[in-house]
Image (spheres, rainbow, N blue to C red):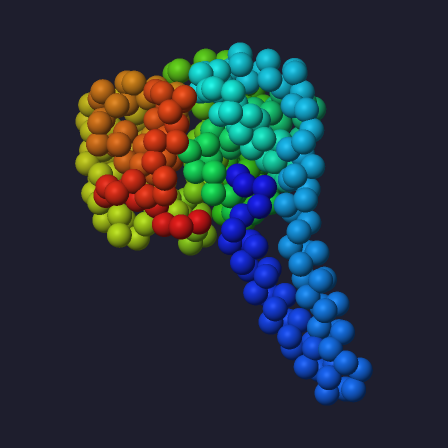
Length: 304
C-alpha cells in the first residue's frame, strides 16, 4: 500500500479544479469575485490529503518490537525478507491496523489477534504495492467455531466467513492455529481475505476482482481442470476446494503462501497463475517484486 497513490492525486486534483472553477464562476456572477473557487479547491485538496497524511504519520512511528517478534515467529515470508522488504511489510501492517475495525464477540481482541489478520493482509498485498483493500471493514472475532446463524457452537461448521459488504468473521482459535503451523496449507486469515479479492461484483465466483478480463477465460479453464483433480483425490488442495470456484481460489491462495514449493511441484500452472496475480514468488521472498505491473502471461491483472 502506498502513502500517496498517483490515482488519488489525479482524482482530487481534477475534482478541486472542476469544483473550484465552478465556485469561482458563481462568485464572479454574484459580484463577490473568484475567491470562493479557491476556498472550495483548498477544501477538496484538504479532504484528499487526510489519508496520505495519516499514513505518513503512521509510517514514521517505530514498529513495536513485540509485533516484530510475532512476525518473525509466525510468518516465514516476513522472516526471509531483506531490511527494505521488512520495513514495507511492517508499514502495510500499520496501515491495515489503523484503517480497519476489530471487534470481539465473547473474546478479547488482543494485539496478537489484530496482528494476525494484518499480517495476512500485508502478505497478500506485498507483491502489489499499488493495491488497496477495497473498503474499511469490521473484523469480528468469535472465540471458536460458529454456525450459519452466527452463534458460537461446538458443532458449528465455520471457522471464518467473509461478506461482500459486511464484516469478516473469524474464529480466534482458528486464527491462532493457522499461524501456529505456517506450512500446512490451512490458514483461515488468508482464506477469508482471499475472498475479499473475489467480491468485485458483490458475488464470490472465483474470479479475483483485479484479474484482467482478458485473462478470465484462461482462469476459468484452469479452475475447472484443477477442481477435477481435487474431486479425484489427485490434488494437493483439500477437498473443500471442490465446493465451488470461490472456495477453490481461497484454498489455492492458502497453499500458494504456505506451501509454495509443493504447489509449484504438484500444480505448476496454478502456481504460475497465482504468482502472476500476486506478483511475487513465496519461495523467494527476497526477490518478491519479480515483475512490474502485468507479467505478460495469461493471468495479468488490470490496473487497481
